[in-house]
Image (cartoon, rainbow, N blue to C red; front, top):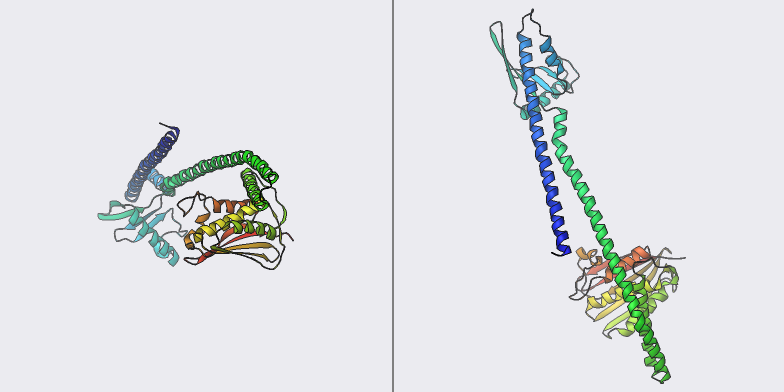
Length: 396
């Protein structure tokens, strides 16, 4: 059995153990609740007997014990009624007025009537039958669970909520650790890739100089130099993954123009490119040029993929209130359903048969985490196209 399988088995063992512990706690709590409820029933039966003896005792009989039993009930709310249902006595209720019932205010009577109705639905009444001067009298003692028993009833729910809270915290901790490990792995792979690219790049620069010495076509050499420089930029980008990039003051219009020109010259002639600059010809911001150009390129590549290599791409740059730089990238592609506007930025999400689904997630991270900006789908219509917006803080 390999390590991932061991981890899965251990995870299921822990989950099953947790469920078993919760089930045992709930089962034991329920048993304790039922026993406590029976104890309260027995206590009320003793009280009913004391009440009966109190009412039938002769004048010369010591009834201090019965009186003490009746007065000792300080926790269980109760109401004593006649056989016809008339309220005679009550205790441990939120009714400040004293018997008899006929002297109570309307508010007091309403409270007692409501409490009596609740008691009838909660517990079976205790019948107190006794005889006075040859007359059989039947009275009923109604009661409801004490506050302690009511609190105990909700204890399992509180316990389950606490366990769920701890479970959620543990899950989030494990998940964050897993994400941190994955980020560390991706950052390490990116840096290693940048390191590996460096060796052939040095050789390519040497070959470019040899081509010049051999009097090769200068235009060809220049284009090769551009591609070598492009590879060097890519290596530099990968080397920055996992570390905090240095931001410096740059003209966003100029940097966007560079990325725009590079992709325009190397894309299909079936794609119509246009760059529209509003308000100002120069707009400055604190950016990292390598990462910024990566954002523009990712948005352009995403637009080209959405159009399947044929259509129009428009990039519009504007200044908003001298506070924000707004870059809109609009394509004439297939569009995005509204319910996917946020999901497309999730790592690994892609609609293409081939691809890692990292382009837009990297774009979001570069803009929002490294440049304190914002990137989102501004608008999209199925079959007509999509507009992505990237916003940066303007430097005045």
